[in-house]
Length: 151
Image (cartoon, rainbow, N blue to C red; front, side):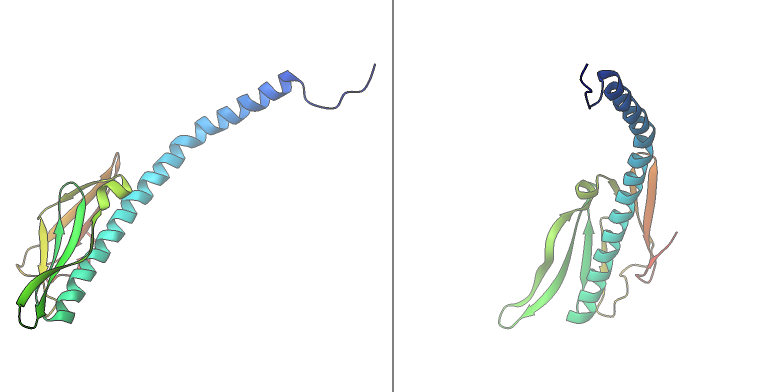
């Protein structure tokens, strides 16, 4: 009888079953890690928007505003002075769908955060933005002066 090299069907089935068991145990942990990372990434992107609005207000010497919608869209507007036309409003960059991009729900306590030419927040109340994805939650807090702080 010739010597055959290779695997039997039983051996291949056993390997597939073992891989399936390992994948079944690892999948919930991987999914949870991805959800946590998405929430942290959404918070980090929103922090960048706050810094952009504040810096644009200081740089241009006029009001800069971060707009936040409950559907997760965010964008920054700032005034610009055009000779002969006067003050107009610029949108810095595109409207970013933060909620959709990171698969999170976004719940801002206000629909906008405005900064004056000194970089101070207009209106002295805290603004909280909550990011959530299933059981994972995180928040961004803009304090009374316009700084992002941990809650």
